[in-house]
Length: 346
Image 1: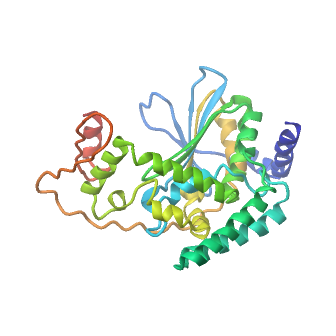
Image 2: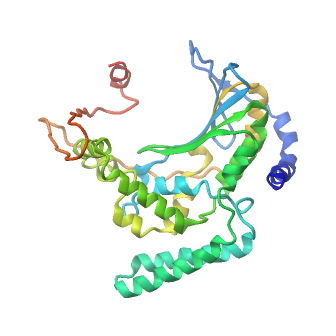
Image 3: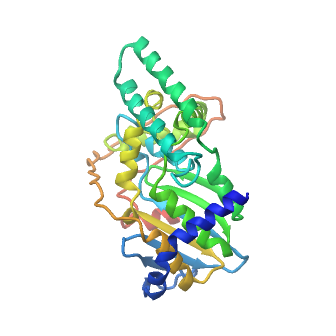
């Protein structure tokens, strides 16, 4: 535990040079009229959105870091990638989660190269030999990794509810922290969202694959996937699932995952949300001090193919072990359309 706290202190010292800028900076914010939660909406210089709502029920802060990317952005040859990367975001950075980053990096780079060779090889015997290499090098790399150090860091600052979730459109990362630990939280998160490492990739793949296997007997998930296929035949909503195709999970690409992070995990595609007991005037300085160092980049275009009108009902059957039920869905123009509020009320 002492080593973990020392790491927090060292990171704090390394970031101290930004303090003067944070104090001098003036922060403007927007509000929504008649908002009962009194949410302040800030936009940092790097276009990161920050939402703050003060609720003084207890001396804690519910935090979210949201990224506007989800399974709809998965490359077609590696579906499930957004969800898999969400798992990898808990594996640490060059600054934590490792015993020797330089040595570990060499092994991780080799594993990445071998996975690309493995994905493109069709001969079953050669694939088996390549996978044996991946397995052996992954074992050596695991000796240099510190499993669950991110979770231990969060526990050290009193955080609870560590979690994350991937949807079609976004990925969120969740912590509930003591109010007096906001700076340590921001420091660790900014480090995490700047330099994630695809550490213990090989073993985490087994966890993701097992999650996929469990989904195959989840009638609710199967019904929802069938519904989306019917509503959005020309859109990734209906063409690919959040957990991905089993065949793609068997042939992962660390290269694609790194490129995915570089494209989408940028401040102009992210938001930080804080709700709880804190001073927003001070909190925004802390957020800017750490998250303000992230570099904005142009975002890829997302081109939508228009769907054909649905002229008659479509029916699909899903066979499973659970009780019979009916799921009905309607397609409309989207969350920013005039119909959205009415449908939400219904």
